[in-house]
Structures are given as C-alpha cells and as structure tokens.
Image 1: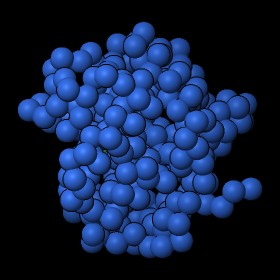
Image 2: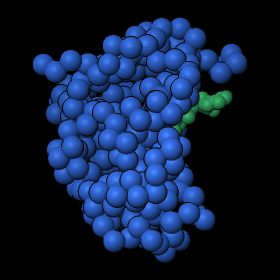
Image 3: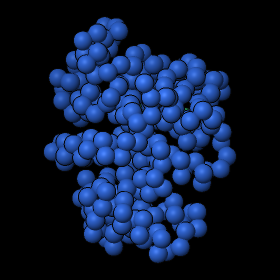
Length: 247
Ligand SMILES: Nc1ncnc2c1ncn2[C@@H]1O[C@H](COP(=O)(O)OP(=O)(O)O)[C@@H](O)[C@H]1O
Ligand SMILES: [Mg+2]
C-alpha cells in the first residue's frame, strides 16, 4: 500500500461558534484520487484549504508528506500544492499563458522560462495553441482546463480541486471528466477533488469521502459505498442524487 501523502488527524475547525470540521481523520494515499462529497456548507472547501495553509484548524493537525502544514510561505506551498478554485478564478485582463504562469511570475522566473512551461502544461490539458488568447475567448470547458493547467504549472505532488466542473453544461462536463481520468492516470498525482455531484464522485474517485456538517461519515471505494453504505443517510444520499442526475 502506498504511504499517505496527506493526513488529517482529528481536525476540528470553527468559525466563531460554528463547528465547520468536526474531528476529521482521513488519509490520502500517494497517487490517489480521493473525492470529497457533501451538501453545500458541509465543510468541503474548508477541508481543502487546510492542506495549503489557507485555513488553520483549532485542533488536530494536517500533515503533508509527514510535515505539519503551517500558515507561512505561501509561495513554497503553491509549488508543492496546486489549487483549482471553485469559481475558476482566471484573471480576465491576462492572456491564457499569463494566467497559467502566474506562479512562475510570483517566484521570479524569467519570461522565456514561463512561456516554455506554460506551453508544456497547456499541451498536457489539450490547449496547446491557446496561450495568446484571453479567457473570454474560450468556452467554459476550455476555461476550466486553463485552471487545471495553472495548478499543474509548478509540477506539484498534490492537486486540490474545488468543484472544478460545477458550472459546465452536462455534455462538456462528461468530456472534462473523461479527460480528467486520463490526466490522473498519466500524471499520477495525489488529488483531493471536491464535488457535490454523486455521479461525478462515484465515477472519478479511487475512494469517496462523504461529509455531512463537518463530519466524515464514510470513506470507501465507489463500489463499497454503493454495496455497503454505512448508514441509511448515505444510502439515501447516493440514491437520490444519482436518480436526480447532475445539477
Ligand atoms: N472564512 C469564513 N468565515 C466564516 N465562516 C465560514 C468561512 N468559510 C466558511 N465558512 C462557513 O463554514 C461552513 C462550511 O463552508 P465550506 O467549507 O465552504 O463548505 P462547502 O465547501 O462544503 O460548501 C459554511 O457554513 C460557511 O458559511
Ligand atoms: Mg465549497
């Protein structure tokens, strides 16, 4: 079994009096694609942000490759942990290439180096020749791929993806999911992928972690979740959302 690259140990996070993560213990193995699923407000984004030091828990700790995450040098964290944020987050006044190379600019790489690396990661996500364009000149699906290319730029061991395909129409979304599976096989990075779409979770995840109100209810392979849900709540959650289709 591969070692755990990310470890949440009894992590509790509060905002004011609200408990947003409640004693979460969870391991993400090296090379694993672990999907986190739960209703809106269940703490998914907060969980991701504990990994790159944007959120610090009050109790417990988060270990990345055996080292406790501390809020500190964000530049170093960005090189180690790629982050695809919920709303896409491309800068409209910057070209695709400039958006992708933003970490390179922050760390003082020269223009030629940035340009070469941006071309490489854009090719990896199938957008080889779109570097000179602006985000508004791309389709929604292409914009999401740019977000992924940007997170890949520094070749991080870990990728955090927060509902990366949420705003895409169903057909484009299926295409993105297939490409994403291919990309994960090809790059073999450790990925923590948040969604609130059951079909997406069961399709993509090596394992799926089900959250409700900050608590981890069950983490298992898609097959085990379907066959042996740990509670009636989980069984209902999986059934209902799968029947509703994607939203
Ligand atoms: N910076 C913050 N300050 C106060 N409350 C927050 C903050 N971030 C998140 N929350 C609250 O924590 C809860 C969980 O949020 P979040 O992790 O974004 O959930 P999810 O991503 O599952 O929708 C929500 O009730 C949200 O309003
Ligand atoms: Mg969220």
